[in-house]
Image (cartoon, rainbow, N blue to C red; front, side, top):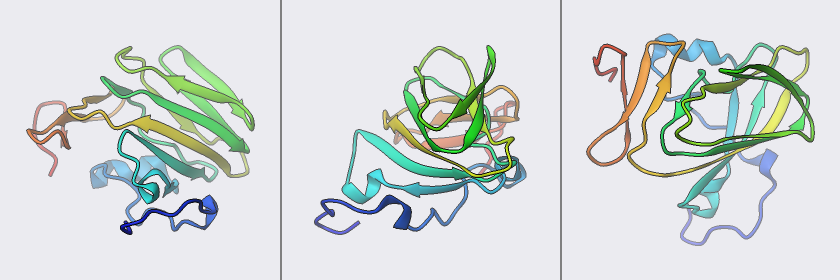
Length: 160
């Protein structure tokens, strides 16, 4: 990041994140061709992150997950997708939004089952010492001693 962040940018012109995910290699394919443009870091934001995310048909926002401490929010800009939670499925279209309060245990993700890309903004806080659970996959994220995420299998075996 430059010493002086920009005042404003054109979000779609930001290069997509080079690495598609921090997930273990055997699980990355489950998100398909998801493309994130990390916007909050450009401005030096420390308390919350903002991403512009594109889901092509067949892609998912993430593995279905629940945060222990971090809230999340999504706002659909273009296209349609399906929000999958413990309660079921909810179709989302441009102009709709959804929020995910931390600590509920209600796992969620977005899936694009349509024929066109879905573009949305996602925002979340950066609370350290976060735990994330993945009910459908052999993955669990726990905080390391420095507060950064450490990936584990459900049996406690470290991934990396």
